[in-house]
Amino acid sequence: AQSVTQLDSQVPVFEEAPVELRCNYSSSVSVYLFWYVQYPNQGLQLLLKYLSGSTLVKGINGFEAEFNKSQTSFHLRKPSVHISDTAEYFCAVRMNTGFQKLVFGTGTRLLVSP
Amino acid sequence: DVKVTQSSRYLVKRTGEKVFLECVQDMDHENMFWYRQDPGLGLRLIYFSYDVKMKEKGDIPEGYSVSREKKERFSLILESASTNQTSMYLCASSSPTPGMNEQFFGPGTRLTVL
Image 1 (cartoon, each protein chain N blue to C red):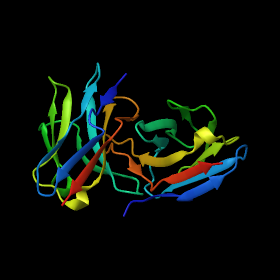
Image 2 (image 1 turned 90 degrees about the vertical axis):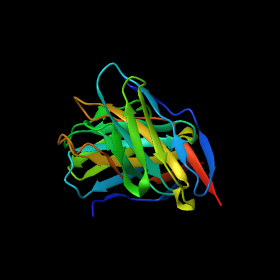
Image 3 (image 1 turned 120 degrees about the horizontal axis):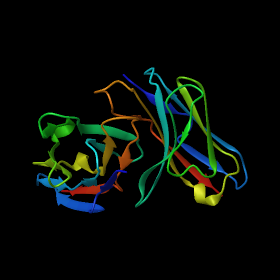
Image 4 (image 1 turned 120 degrees about the vertical axis):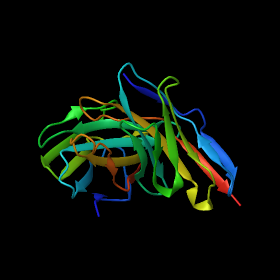
């Protein structure tokens, strides 16, 4: 079975500073990896995904993530955050075969202040 | 624009009531999912369906049932609502086509059981 760990429940950062949200996963098989964002009172929206190929994945709103198989990590980064990036971010994993059941982490709340 | 809609954004029910949460998607997706989201626990899968009239239990099915009579509609049923079912409920859908694996989410229904 797969599992996802997001160690940071909350990350405070100042506007225009860089940020990294950490995600580690465990799986005995090859996986697909996803980052979703949830703005207040909204559903989840896909930021980016890794299916195969280049380990550096670029997503919407200037976010990117790097798949590191040896460290079983998929950390999310942004070089300069905006107030509007304040939201909750979820990392998710699923097997790359079989049915598409996603396993989510517990989420990281990014708080951007001026 | 692809869309997943949920019948209510906010719902207040009394203990013991039968509660129906409706989800409709317009993307012709085969797969549909119901999650509940609680602070510190992330998203947990309640039930999913990969075809009309097909359903599978997720990680926390107790106290819930589902119905999928039409491809576009997936209903979550709380047979006898209890206070511990107060939560945010999220519906999602996805295509089984390889490379189109992301789940699209509705805006959520915040259910309060008194």
